[in-house]
Image (cartoon, rainbow, N blue to C red; front, side, top):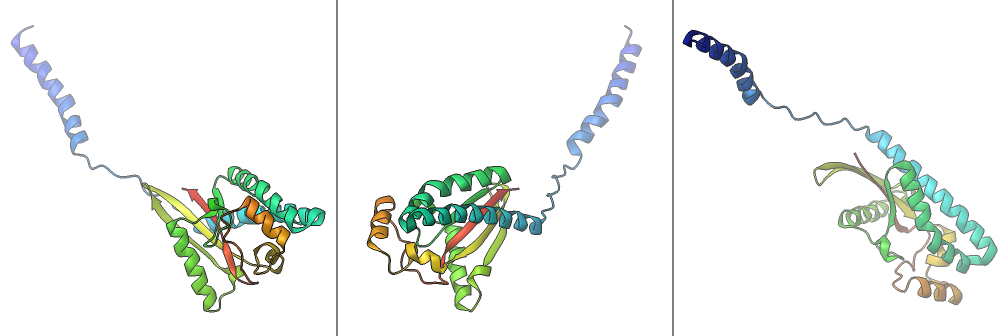
Amino acid sequence: MNRSWSYLICTMLICAVSPNAASADTAPKHEPAPVAIDVDSEIEKAKAAIGSFAAALQTELKLAMKEGGPVNAIGVCHTKALPITQAIAIEQGLKLSRVSLRNRNPANAPENWQIAVLQSFENRKDTGEDPAALSWHEIANVDGRQQFRFMKAIPTAPLCLQCHGSTITPDVEARLNELYPQDKAIGFETGDIRGAFVVTRQL
């Protein structure tokens, strides 16, 4: 191949390749746009999950109370609350739990951010807000990912006092000591905040 042909081929290659390569190196890189979050929809999903859990557990507890009173209900709560929680969480694609500043089960001890929310619930109750209506939510950044967080207060109802009140029967106390030796969930009065439901979901 003579020099003129070699020069022509090299020129064509430079024209064909170099501009594109330079363009790739210098073109501005755009980060993907953040996904819009429908917060109202997330809140409704969280409330639905909590409602499903509460209804299922109450059904089990009422049946247990009818069959064997509070002592029987404690055992049912001990064995069935977690499976019910897990089933709803898997079905609805989220994480569901209960936490309390005075927890009965050590597994229900709150994380730092949950402690702050529980304390804020107590403050809001002290200013006159209805404990049954107390809720909170946020979008948090966790390890570079967005996480929806929702908490709803659990008020103490009169029926709860049989196992969570200031005066409980010796047989109930014995059963609690057997299943929950580190129990802190007694001494409540009607209307006190016993804890909160927690829903989180990775977005």
